[in-house]
Length: 215
Ligand SMILES: *[C@@H]1O[C@H](CO)[C@@H](O)[C@H](O)[C@H]1NC(C)=O
Image 1 (cartoon, helix red, strand yellow):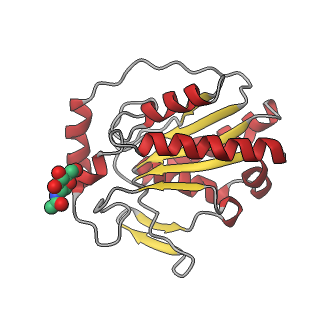
Image 2 (cartoon, rainbow, N blue to C red):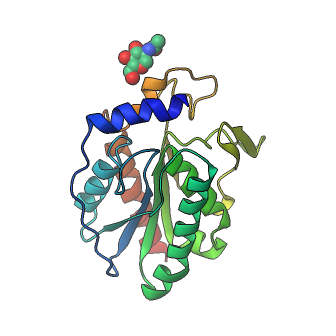
């Protein structure tokens, strides 16, 4: 309840900019899922649109796909997001055999990407996914020692091993979604500010160069 209320306030405060989506075979595509109650698009509260723009600036011709799902409270929304992500990955990498990907999401969107990654083809994950970048990922608290985290939104598995070392977790100090014992809900809404986006973009660029030259 608290999560929904707090995000609704934030969404009203930030209007979504117009977004364009190219469906071509770009060298890199950011597949991104927005947070709860954010309007369809890359997301505003969690820094999604800023992140996409920054990646597009850093990597010429990079494109983005916003996961089509309700981003509503509840498990059904999450499941729909996972389904859309998996559907996307069934066709896009075949249609664009050289395209590389970034998985990204904020809040519920982080959960969606996290759960989808768990079901993705392992080879695809290893050879085509440059990086995962999450902002306030509700599943971040899953660890190697405790591979299932019982989040308020259901159990979440650890990110698959095939993407080890290529995940950038953005977690603001005290954000209850991603920091153990965190209680500061305002900290869940700060990812569009500070240097989260800048650092994440740098990370993507580094990983992109690595995978591009190794593959
Ligand atoms: C909670 O986070 C906000 C910024 O998001 C900060 O201004 C405030 O000081 C924090 N509160 C506590 C108790 O740390």
